[in-house]
Amino acid sequence: MSKNTYTKRSGRTSLLALVTAVMLGFFTNALAQNSVTIADFTIKPGEEKTLAVCLDNADPMSALQMDIQLPAGITYKEGSLKRNEERLDRTTHSIYMSNIGNQTYRLLILPSGQTNMRGNSGAVAYFTVTADEYFTELSHIYVNKIIGSSSTVTGEGGETPSYAMSDISVAVSPNIGKLYVAEDSLAIKTDGSYKKISIALDNKIAVRGMQADITLPEGLTVETNDNGETVFEYGDRLGQNMIINSNKLENGKLRVMVYGLTDEIIATGDGTVFAFNVKADETLPLLSEVVMDNVLVSDEDGAAYPIDEVGGIEVTNSFLAHYTPANDSVQALRDMLAETVAEIAEVAPDVKDNEEITAAQAYIEAKTDNLQKSVDEAYADETLAENFDEVMAPSEEIIAAIEKLLEDAIKAQEEHDTPSGIDAVTTDGGNGGEPKIFNTNGQQLSEPSVGEINILAYPDGTVKKVLVK
View (tube, rainbow, N blue to C red):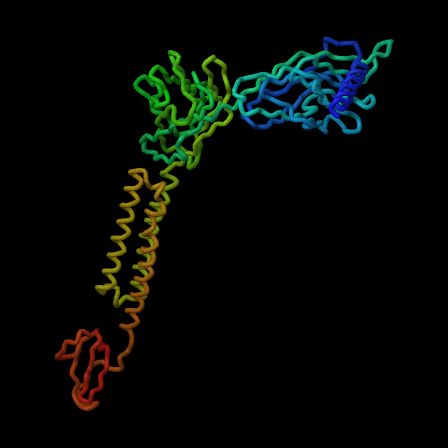
């Protein structure tokens, strides 16, 4: 079975080569501006990437051939070759990817008739490659023997023109790690106080040097020394002879460079490599982001690798996002209390100055003052952002107390207004004689207490509660 399969594959390859030779012809137009490109890319060990084969053709093209040599550690995924339907119609063009040995594959695009490819730029085909688990070295895909041809017949001999194109080299960079901000988020005040941003590197290879461009949002600036240079905090992963430099680019980005003066390296691992402080002013938006890009690292041999997996950090203006709404909430409670006191003056004028009412109002005012103090302290020590709900929790209790204050005042006014049926206690011997008079505390009175509830105890055992006006 193996021998038969091999024979069929060889026969098919020879047939394709023969057809290609006929279709491409032997006339080469060296002046034509035609090119094939495959974009450089980064790939993780074990990851798949689909690559686009792009053809920019000033001349009409009906057929295309090229040899694609893959580096060690990168393999072609069998059966992954796909046409771009926008340029190659299934009924007019066939596509093939054949293994011709030595990690090299021949890509063929052949017309079934005299139809040229549509358009003159963009992808014509796609194929997928896979990186093995040990792929950690910068490599290249080499593409050569690139020839295209047109279905247009030229010359007296009826030749179809062919176009030789320049070889290309595609950089394949291993994904050797990621650069990210160690903090999950950054909530910062706008009073000029500093907050730290820690930059961490997760690297799968030893790193001799590193570069990263950092973009700060409007209103956020880095801490600098007297010479105007950025102040950096060195992480434990940096050796004593590794230094950090930075400069501000024309586009406003801060370019940070880490390198060693000797053969010291950042060993493989994960963790903070450096940190810097930032401060904010009133122009900082409510929400913004610190972004890093253009990250490159170099290995011990000086080979450069781009790092595509880069993380930034979301920045929150704590004054706008936390202190302002907290302060507004406290003020809303004060306003609610003031409105309630004004309402009590209208609906309960006779009891508004009662001891129970004034004491409850004072309690609410004290609770509100304490809440304001908690907000100010939490903002000052920069815990308001993370403990916002906890700090503001007393608001519900204060709201409930204000609502109860109004309810109690209305109830007290209703009791005050309840008619007793008498304007004074009569001692005409009714109900078995003259009653004894007591207050609600059980103390006997010589005469009724006006404006208070009095208890009348008659000799026959009858007891009455009356409010004397």
